[in-house]
Length: 474
Image: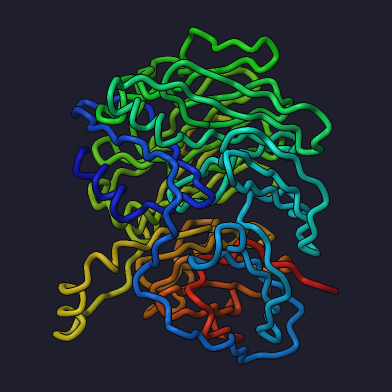
């Protein structure tokens, strides 16, 4: 997996807000598994997906007026604390800028961290106005940990009451690590009302943030066993109440305690007692790591292994959960596979192979694909799958376009925008407008989710990466 590690370092170094990618995995396989090494936090500017930004991007021009939707859009260019833009879908106007932080479950507040001169300012920003409603300052430099490969900031407990930040290593610490391979990891745990003094957790070893329980007592960490070059990991539990690291490894019955893979995305159960993380592994195949945050155990749920060594298509694996948490869908439109998972029984109920559209490449398109494989490989979908409000339809990104699946039989009922390379999906609260982003075209487009007909678009946006939220004003 050394080659895979190199590819991740070169292609996917999108550690927004200085966050580090979280790496882990689980399960066993008859074939030996190669390891993936974690990436340290970085202050590099985010990279473009495929093409550089224009010298002077025109103002977004809407094609359909009179919509009440506000779009919370993450872009790939901007200052470190101004990378979420709220756009009026009717006029194309920018209503406000928000920090690219982690939102509360109801999106009323966005939590962000900004580092300067050896200190970190943590701000609670009102999403509806962009105003800072409270903040505190920590000694030392900390960052929100990344939730997955797309660089989306994480660190929030499922109920939004607690927030974890990871220390950003100093230059001296990095040099010391390169010299003696020894690491001291630090985390800051805050209550999001900022009423309690922050708790600083110091752990001897190379640890990364995994999850935080809703009661603020359980911190789960990924432990790198022998330095960045070996890629061997295990999940550990830190008791925030007693301030101790449990000597036992968090592992499911019959599972190996040593884990490998790359976390692609994660979703919490409605009650906040479970965290379901989707991992990619070239040898074993993708799986869901189901972590019980209250009772400190984990179960691995294997997903279909089709195309597991096709790394570019593996990146299209996405999760969607029904509002009540009765069902999780793991789907990959690029590979044409979907699995319906039972969270209560912790197993796959059924799987389906999706009928693929016929693909024909002419000489010019074949030449373009040959000459620009790297640009095409840099797509890391954000919110690549979602359910309609009634749960009857599942929408997911494909290698080109998007698919509409009937959840009754997991069949393909529609193929939309089949010539577009898309990066994100989002639905209006009433389920009547399906938004998608094409960074390649610098366009946000919205469709009728039933017919797939185009309802409107915003063009000229400077490399939008994804629509994180759609808010409808009445």
